Image 1 (cartoon, rainbow, N blue to C red):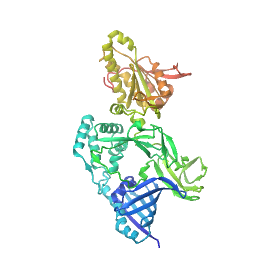
Image 2: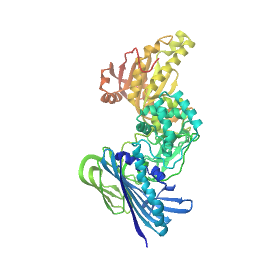
Image 3: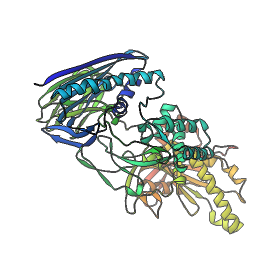
Image 4: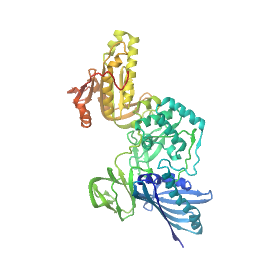
Length: 603
């Protein structure tokens, strides 16, 4: 006869609630530390109207286990659950919960709760001899982390295998290429002391947050670390709905225009803006990293999801909802129906879902929700941040950096492939009267001056987080992810002309203009290039420049001045122009820039 066996344990640890959650919600690292066996997971599938993963493992290379793993439930900073139903092995089912309760700013109470149904005596023996000690090590894991004030995750029995000579050589090269030794030391410490997961799925922005370094500087550090052989990288292909990787590519040339997500049941078009993320991992010749998987269903796998619930067919599920200072939406996994959460705060609210989707168009921020499932299938309801993960280094961002193009110039798309990039600011420059320059001072001197002018523009654009896409004659096409950076680069170019001219055979003037909008990435003669209406309009706007000024569209001006009112004090004028190739006249803004004796770009 099957009998329920329960396990209960609790402990106060000297960790903040946030720190305890970030540690214990990473179920892959947690399970590895406590000694739970590696697992083979299949993709999500639907069976008996429920969403499950098939999984299997071997204990001590002898006992085979096979089970159905159901979708986990959780509320961030509160609890998460695990549910398994076994087909092979000494257990019938397992239901497991970890709860965390705020005690004080630096204290959290952890509750471990497990319900086990054993098939036979062997299951009961395994519980007491193996599983219970493993579960208690979860408490040990948190307490060991607390001893370091939350600065170093315990590795348990993980053995770090380093090739010290290769590591020292790479670090030496990195110190010769990158000036910030504190950041290099911190990266070396991560590689030497970090867990396998920490060194195999590295996000520069997240690393910067943990170590309190500048985000942009951290990206540059990781790119240099790749160049010297310390780190490698790959491109993660992210589903726009569930926002988890659905594939990887070692190079941009390996990308295709569509990727399939089995959970959401959709094919989606790749987009540099959100759906292609650059992640780094330690070079295999420097540190060997185990690729074993212990859990892939925990909260850390989907950091944008604040809560997730299973709701059975025809069930009314009541949930108490904490206050999150985030812009949220509610979505049903797999079917991808979604509704936004408003700022209105109420005591109670219903969320009703039918075969036709949500019956509401939006929901308030309630203290208690009743989720009503009117369908004949289990639904998975998630509450998620609408904003994309701000710790994801997207292809849009990294390919717009000059350092990326300097170090990874061979990274281009496959010929013929076109991928949306989202909004970019495209800047064009042109050297005024360059033909006359060649006639007046001769080809040799003019060529030298033009090259110095290119070097000057590259510094200005690079110093403002942009990149030179290409040169066209004596013109430059630059790209930025931020129109604020594009504007500042344009100002810097014009303000520093006097210093540039001191190094030239004859003074020059530069025409500058930029525009912002959606662009498409392509392979143009083995170059990562952009095209589209925004690019064409930016080039035509630059043609309106007379030299020594900056020209932008009036819409861009209105956005800039709404956030930076001081721009309105710059000398300028509004005017209307007919751009070549465009039917309608457009409103433009001209800034007449005063040259400065010093500027950010150098000469």
